[in-house]
Length: 576
Image (cartoon, rainbow, N blue to C red):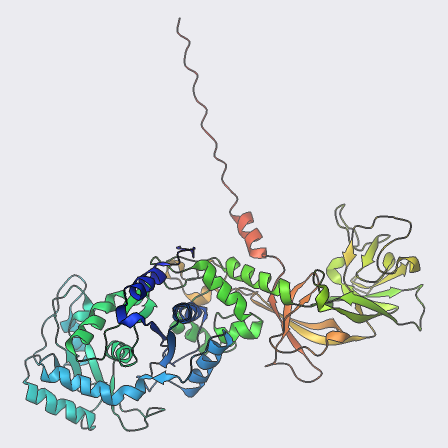
């Protein structure tokens, strides 16, 4: 991994040198060019941040361009989602560009290649085309249609455009080198017949350009100077350059590749994510367990944490796998600074304080943030009956358990010291209620006689709280490398990636939560309202992230450090 430093990453160094040498008249134009055939994920966020930040750093511009040359898979809903995601990350792009805006020019460029003898109409079937292409170790064979005359190619291409042929009957191919070791240069397809209505151009076209042909020419038509793309396009760069060299284009952008993002415990393949969605292994593209920006945003991730994560991992030429814990750490750091604190009980256990007045409800003051006075305070209520966490009570607690137990005293956050005096169980022996007493002299949690109480627990007023459902989200896969050994992804799904808790209690002053407004449930983690599933009076809350990385502790337990025991050296016999 090549981290950011004072000199910047290698792409920044290249652009800086170009500006200093007045290449492209000192201008910097980048672009983010997604195909609108799905939702963006965090891997796209890396590209978004890189392209927009490079443009910002060198006083240039970054275009948002939709490479919409495959009408069968592209939808307006994806366009809307992509635009929203880019804005959510904090980047402005002006009027978006579309590859479909250039269809007339792209057709003219294709005709120009035909007239130069650099492109021909091929009538091989799809299977024959693959057969003639050869393999990684064997060269391809020239198509029997490769030597058609310019006039015949022009006529056939015009008829393709006019809709005279069925899909698969003819394709337009570049004439490069069927023996090239680079498979992308073995007479690649430039145009194919596809009788599908396009969302923007309607039925005007029944032939559509391929991505490799569209992409480089769109870059040139937009005046892009630096075409930044992920490493899998490195082998496509010779075709990118060949196309621009053979045609009379406005400019020749420089393609620069960088390593794509790989994060453990998840997958960043749009095709594989689509399978999970279509097979109902997750609940849609915005499922909070997915690495899609829609899902992460719904879960409570902040744009600042994602951008910080992208900055930390940096830009390099070598693929690597990033620890999910680093992403979650960036999120925790951001939320720790800005998330107001509240109290909630996820697994409630009733507590009755028998010596507290029956008809009294007190108002207590609680800090919204322990370190930030500017975030103010809030009023919470306290009465004879409260809820505490089931996990904060043990009937037979071990020595280092400092929470509630028979005869044990604990501090109720912001309230009083209480002591458990009795336990009520149901017929099955399950504890259903605790009987406690409180010390009225300990308001605020401090004992006037100076006695030490180690345990502090949170609580919620049973007579003044919000009933809510809480969804506990965790990592989607059990193994840090879900694709290890090419196993089926479904076999590696984490069965505990989602737990629904039905009867949770939330302090009432925070009942009006807002979507994407994350709060910290004290001692429990960070949570936010699920606007998609919540209804008025029936909130559903998502856990954004835990307070600590439990997976790191588990990994350490499962993979203890090896002890480097040095073998005992044999004693040499003493010389006489």
